[in-house]
Amino acid sequence: MDLQFAKYHGAGNDFVLVDNRAGHFDPTRERVAALCHRRFGVGADGLMTLERDPLLEFRMRYFNADGGESTMCGNGGRCIALFAEHLGIGGRVKEFMGSDGPHSATVDADGADGGVVTLRMVDVAQVVHEQGFFFLNTGSPHYVEFVDDLDGLDVDTLGREIRRDGAFAEIGGTNVNFVRIDGYGRIAVRTYERGVEAETWACGTGATAAAIAAHLYRFPNCLSFGVDVRGGELRVAFRTVGDGFTDVMLTGPARRVFSGVIDPDGLVHRAVRF
Image (cartoon, one colour):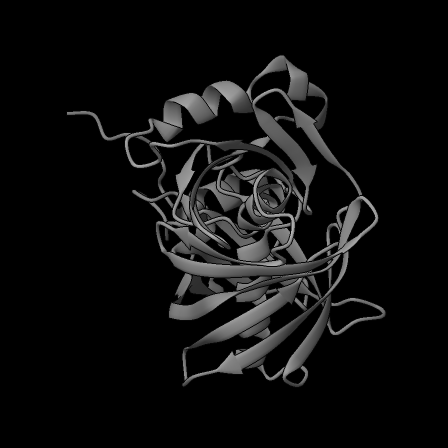
């Protein structure tokens, strides 16, 4: 089965995208994992299908690199909005359905392949503050811990331990963010993502969670944050409503890397023995 696909990234958070409005592609766990495999496939943190929606311009389905369908991905939402732009869907503002509800994204293209995309995230009704960490859902669940030495941190080891902690078992584990405060309204974030089971170069819902946590932790009067990630810079802005947050906006770069045709069922994804 030949499959047309495109590879996009948002600040280094990379995805395989498929226009599935005709319903020809069945994103089984095996196919998605094979396509996302960095040795034997296209290579990506996740895969998204753009599908028809009865009310909005399209529907976004997101799958982690391990093949499982997952919750909302912020950088993925920004990339699929640019993908829709390249497909000629909608105007500058795209209205689409995600796993966590409706979203809108504003696409400001800077050329044939890239641009800046601002995604409206879901409202955040509750933030849990425990000893040493914050926990909140920004479309996906996120643990946020503030640290001094972000560069020297073993994110994969520590993130894996927290991700699999029994306290988060009922929600299938959590994403884990380590955050350094670099100044007023400026933070740096490293994220371990469940489903990828490794540190990624950026995480949109994680950057959003980190910015909200930084507001609560250190900057009660700051409602806009620059967020440095391994793959570049994101920006998160929001308004407070009581104990919650609304008008949550995630802004950053998105770019089409390449497109092609591949047979996902023909991919070999096993170790070669010598």
